[in-house]
Amino acid sequence: MDENRGEIEVLPATAGPNGDGHELVVHADLERLRRAVAAPEIVKNAGPNAEYAYADFFKAKIANPNTRKAYKRAVDRFLGFCQERGIELRQVTSFLIGDYLEHHLIDQAGHPLSAPSKKQHLAALRHFFDNQQMYHGVVLNPAASVRGPKHVAHEGQTPAFDDKQVRALFKSIKTDDILGLRDKTILMVLAYTAARAGAVAKLRIEDYYSDGTQWWFHFGEKGGKVHLVPARHDLQQQMETYLKAANLAGSPGKAPLFRSARGRARRLSPDRGLTGNDLLRIVKRRLKAAGLPEGTFCCHSFRATTATNLLRQDVAREQVQYLLGHSDARTTDLYNRTDKEVSRNIVERISL
Image (cartoon, rainbow, N blue to C red; front, side):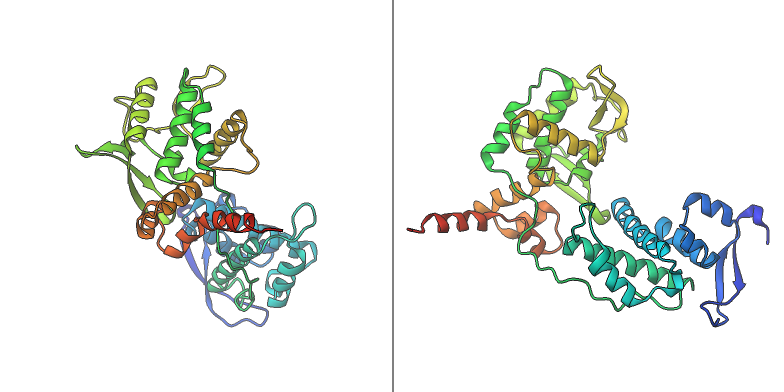
């Protein structure tokens, strides 16, 4: 084996306490692998196969960066729980995982995490141990038989704006400088395309274009989906004003469309784009300035608001589903807040 070439080597070895003689995949340049993805001690102690499986899972198996981050946080938290109790990786059982989810998965205040959060943690552990089993880091997947908590959602948890609040928010933003103009444009894109904040933040110059009859936004959404949404007339005018003020005409197509602020000069960076978290901070800051509850609303509130507004106007659910980029119409239903309005009308009629 030539370790300088960093080849993958197949070595005969044992898996599990008794050993079953399987041939195991081991990375020749394990030190370089360790620098790329540092595995916790409990994984290192389980051997090179477990360590390779850990790195493979977080470097090659999960394409979405947000999912990768959430799964790594969940897996590392569980592995830390085991390590504190002196439990080895191959000693993890389904009973231990079930007990962890029910009694030990709590927040900083000591309260149990929500059912959706627990289901996400369980999903992360299932996929992680499935990969460990494939590389013989463990004999069996201990999370495979664990049942998660029941959770039935009739509507999403993200609160929607009242239509008047959105208009008040837009009106409150002064556009006499480029940052105000940028922020108002971003909020209008969120509201009038119903795109996710991450997709808006990733927009490039080339992602806003005209086909000769209509201007379009080309969004890269979750799961590698490509989603095209036309720009309505007032959003198109806003985009023209922003592009001109930001001097983006003639910029390379791969350059970011919405850019971060440059120091305290209230100017835009020539090449640094925004992130989803940057958009969240912009939304929170603008909500506070407009006198709206920044602790209640977030970027996703625009999606819920747009969906509710359209469904209230009897727009076909299939069209709203397409706008939101949902594969399943049931997901679109979670964004509909019209039932809350019906419920309010009912309780107001109680004549006690």
